[in-house]
Image (cartoon, rainbow, N blue to C red; front, side):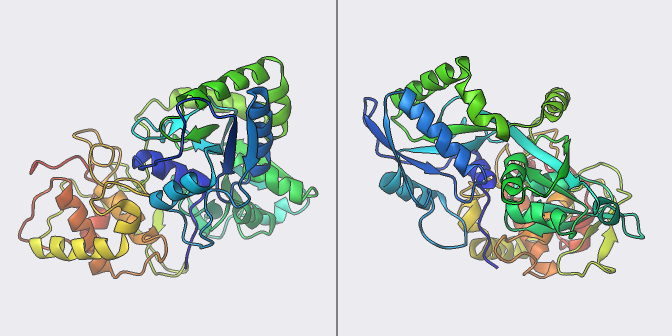
Length: 424
């Protein structure tokens, strides 16, 4: 199954992995620019409208690429190299680039404007006559939550308790899962709800805030190195549009409802812990009462309870060697040959395994990896292969080999925080 990364997942991966982007840029502000939008973005209509207004106010002519930044025609997403080629060939600035505290771009070569739309991931449920029939938990007390594959919505969804997950390949299908009754709730980026309502005006949803560091995002203009003057002109135009009310008029129908935005601001203030990165799963230091689906098992009977351990599980040298081979075959394309990150986050260094106080556990990482990875064929490996891959990740992040092999059960049950090991 080939799966295209969502625009927000792509943005997070690019900035967290320090994408190497080189674009055509003059020392002075150009008189005209080529504008791209993010592939598959539900806010593309808004992004183009804001770009026209901003660039017109800045006195810069704009042309729009017809196919966005991804013109390879495939379904397997876009790599950093493809993005670089697309920027060189097709556009000078990206409108609608998502940015957040978990993807601030501080180590990226991209340059960013001020935000023009503050939005976020919300929880939606069906409203109306059909809601009473669809918003009913299964006999075991669990509800089905829809989320978009390989995006922040999936990471927010797995934080929910007493839930099963319906993972969809696009944000539109994620909303549709609630509308068609495949799920009782969905975690989805709010502009996707707006876009869905425009296509289906008869459909109504109850919208609620989600409390997660993954939830908060801003849309900005992004461009490559050497475009400081262009971004300065864009920021100036945004300030003018904001002061005279034109920006508010353009974004009004896309903005979070006032009640949601107010609650969101309050909850953001309460999320003072370090921003979570991508591999997140059951990370509590005590055994969880809820259960998680095991890779490759059906929903009926396909769950196990997660037990607790207190120390990092042992693994041996042969597992590391085999895990390195598995990584090169199935993971390096997205996470980089040296685990440095590409179109998916880095799996080495302090962003993944800090020196202390990690919010990730070995069991949480293994659970997420074995259930969801690799993205183009999740669950394709055996339990032993996932254990060997986990051994390789542990070794590259400073843990030393031992005499005992790492088993899938030992990896999944480990509640040891993933802090950088002592070997390095």
